[in-house]
Image (tube, rainbow, N blue to C red; front, side, top):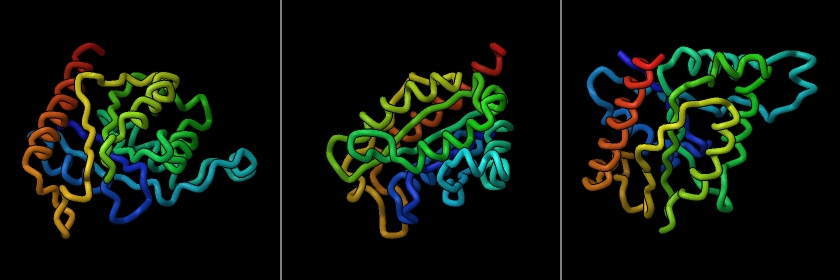
Length: 188
């Protein structure tokens, strides 16, 4: 059984990226679980806080979950053609202290997907994540893209991803990432 940690790069409770993550968890193949975690309790990064009181509990708990998971799935919005600040802040905290980077991120299979109400999708945000994830030493899966445009029309009032074409693409995407994780396990 493989567990993938999924995080949404948005704090909004009704976030389309959180909904997309829930749909991915629902569509995960047999033997794969997507455990959705929150970045809501992670404070703004402050080196003075790190020096005086250490790594906050919410950060340490998420670091441990990612370190123990088979992979990491980030659902990112796109703000001003780039990465949302809260998501980057979470990754910055998760990479502290630097000695923990190999344990948390080193060769970890990672992929980014995203949803937006606009028509241009989250391509620029997803691309902006690449140098960050490369710096952390992750094994980025580039075998597929999940870019959802017009998200406001694709989800039901209860949050269910209702658009069948998008569900099919998401299912294929999650299956592809799960297969990549299995291939990576055999290599290492």
